[in-house]
Length: 183
Ligand SMILES: [Fe+2]
Image (cartoon, rainbow, N blue to C red; front, side, top):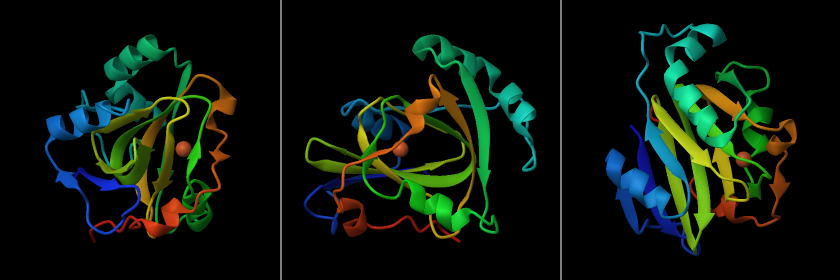
């Protein structure tokens, strides 16, 4: 289930609030400049659907987003627990960082956790199937795919360099709860 937990960035213990309703999550994230949407596939997708099939199923939404923000390409990335690079992939963006461009992902399947730090708070959003999250450039964040990563996501690109992470050096991510998806 998609959830948002909002913490003080000084206190990873008890969240200030937790939300599961779409509108609550959308509004909380919008207040810090992060866009959150829910998309429906235009046709049923199998778990093994390849990139072309996935893109076709969400073509209208993808084209709307591309037109709005100027994304020039999309791809579909998959991660599963047995992937030889799973641990390395998890570690890559597990520390607080920013990018010079949007980080925009649509979860076709599976789950992952985005942690956005803004205004003295941390917004822990567990994204699941059907969720679109759009972080503008320079939003401070980290991403945890969990110890057994399992997701398929569409990524949106304007410039290849947009995906370079600028790490803040802050160890805040180590103090906050890691993503532990339900079994
Ligand atoms: Fe990132």
